[in-house]
Image 1 (cartoon, rainbow, N blue to C red):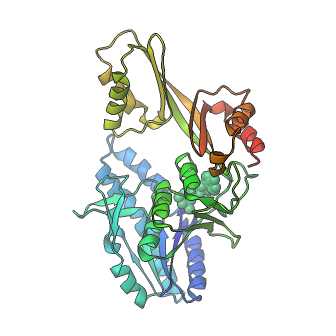
Image 2: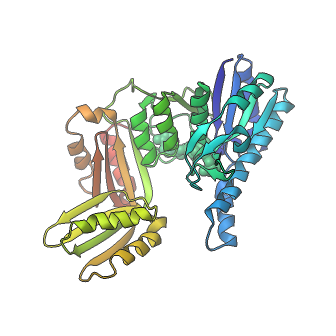
Image 3: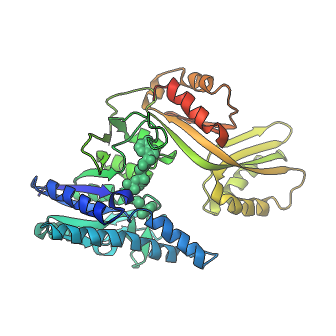
Length: 395
Ligand code: ADP
Ligand code: ASP
Ligand code: MG
């Protein structure tokens, strides 16, 4: 039995007509003598709206209840798609995470898949043409409902493909992976192939076309991910082991809403650096770009996402409460811009080109890895910086 896993995102199933359109695509595929496992996201902006609603009823959100709420979105689209399919003669059944046994850790709103049992899906595929599975959802050993983090349906799909040893196709409102977000920069070019490592950087640096955890799983199990459009048959992009094109810079990612936290004039105690980051980590907060400079005193600067600012403020005020003479500042409204490319490993001069093209823009922080360079700029310079980098690296 040849199985293909397909995933359709929120914009692909945003209303009844779109769901019927997806059903037609599935019906066409089923004619090719394959069985489909179809992962769906919640319709359109459902998840955003449910989050908004939760904030209207309570000041403090209980994450367990939030997951109970958010998982309803995927259940609506999965059942509707199964109905639409049966209506056009495609035998199909929908399953939620509990029924599909998608086992996760108990970290509400950011659970990780631990184990995926496929016996039931395989058995159902014998009697059906397509099995529809709710994306984004998981279940713990204790029977608690979890979610995999925003955008997590991609991860559900790749994990299912790995467990079923199937091909994985992810369909969305864009025709593949582009050098930069095509909705913001229509001149962006489509990438034919991209390596796991490049895509991991692109996703974690802001390209939401794929959930970064889905790329991690694909890399671990050697699953090629095909990304294409739900609304056209245009050839899409492949995330795989090798980048056949091998450009020096493959793509550019942008992440808004960054806050820079700066601690200056701290006493020259190197233990303090560890203490500060340890305290912040304990709160489950993610710190990003970091700079530590020591001269007469110690100066530490790092970035966080804007919405975590009050959490960081709280953590820092606790750890620094007995210290005097230092300054602390929080500046919001920054954007992180990154270029990514496997070719950077073997080519020199990329950094110099990067800084040359940004010479008239004040850069606040920089971080690099073997295959990426990121810089932090004020949001007002974002368009100018992106334009300059897109031109320089022919993206
Ligand atoms: P879905 O709801 O189908 O999961 P998403 O909205 O999560 O779709 O992801 C698709 C969106 O990702 C596109 O509409 C596009 O704006 C955005 N995007 C950001 N960076 C890129 C990129 N480099 N290539 C393609 N799309 C990108
Ligand atoms: N519906 C969820 C979200 O909006 C999961 C997904 O779209 O992948 O984040
Ligand atoms: Mg998505």
